[in-house]
Image (cartoon, rainbow, N blue to C red; front, side):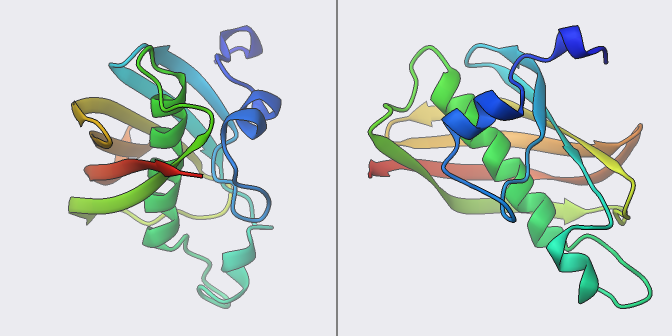
Length: 150
């Protein structure tokens, strides 16, 4: 995607999410359909903190970090949708269902995280997500998150 197609860049993401290095897992958002869908990008580099121990000599991105990237994309989605989570609230990841990891993720890969809205019954939000590297599915599942007082 061309830079002109970026919906939220890294600076805007820092304004939306409370996460910071080394735990910020979203580099940019390339598609956003209000209250329906978000597509976010995470560029995986060899410099990620987890690669030194997972696994020495054979670096593989931990599945839980892929799940965290999905959750952060979901937080951006909820914070920017029309019926958004208020700025004075946090958005906590509270559940994951039917999560499956299909293929490993290596340094140099680019994650394309796609989430669609499933149900919103405030304060609970549920979303379904699929994560790709190229056209290959690396993870999928349903996420739940809740609005809480900051």
